[in-house]
Image 1 (cartoon, rainbow, N blue to C red):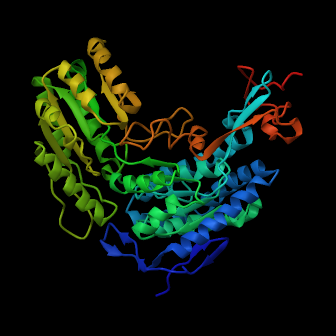
Image 2 (image 1 turned 90 degrees about the vertical axis):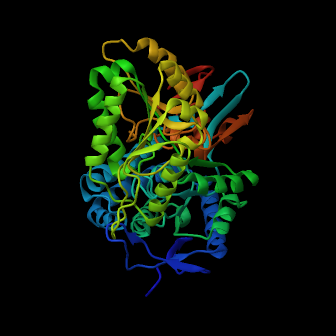
Length: 531
């Protein structure tokens, strides 16, 4: 059987030094898919990095780089739409995610939408945050990094977070950097087709051939060398905490920036008045949010905190009913089964009691029982780290706190998360409790929600899909939202007393677009610099 080619330096060619091969798995059948991909070694990595570095240098020398990058992003979005049926079919086979509405009607349009948002941001140029101090004659803006960005895509979003089409890819390209995509091994075929379409769009836009490159898999030590290589500019990673921390250590030891999305239990606080008003409804919402995508969303609520008492007990019972009666979904890979089982075992060792589920489902389909656990507030506070163990499936742990004050203590003991939600009474009865909990929770999460489940992430300029460690590696950046996500893959460049005709057009006196916002002498404006 032939082994699929990698895309390096503008050519689809065999791996130079594959140490092994692999095939993706169909999670719905448990059987391997009949396509084989290489596990690349350092020769492929070195070749991709050299080509990516050359592409970055060539880009910096293109006076019309901005127009070409924007054209690429728009064209790539259109090509994805033109090949939607083929892409959805491959992604469905490799992930078992439903064709409709998930892949075709939700995730694929989200992917093309963020590409087009990025194209608009590139043309507008305001994202560069051009700043001009006329008195000191110092000017600055955000510019490309000058090297290739490596993107590691996750298994749970074959389009929207794909290493050659998703959010990190889009942000890095829009900021003016070439990308080396490292495919997720759960959906290499989907990634290969996306890379083919991206490469066609690269050629059509007249960008350097190595603007987009693709390798499928590397041994661990080669992955560490990739993110720490002298020629790499930065890395974007979405995946497990264990893998992310190893890559983080390798990159940071070499002084290379790496932006990671790793682990989050997304705590949900249900206050007493909300329980009394609509506890049963919130329990139903909780299960539906946990079960979306078989619980394989990084914003799935994994921890729910309720006060003790009759209303709290009724909530737990109603939630257990939904978890027990709901149909278990399909997980994305075999590793997911063992990871979920290990996570639940850790929660049990820490004192949590399994109310519903707790075991893999026998058979070829990769599936795990919907699982609801319970633990007291005292037990949680005695072992908060272990009881925040993530189990990436339809799993939730309910913490029954003594009272609102203990709910505050629980919020204080939380690790960093992507999201945190508070459900409160519509009558206003929970305002005193809310004002105790919210300021504490606010510091623990990237996105605070009221009366809303966190699953799902809107592609909005105001979105923060980030948060304190261990949700991400840095609390100051978002992985979703254009243009803010672009700043991860840009460098701040300052020009001190540089002659006007040598400045980038964004920093010259005339506004280059007429609508670009620049900060001139302390004021954001679209005006030209006054002379």
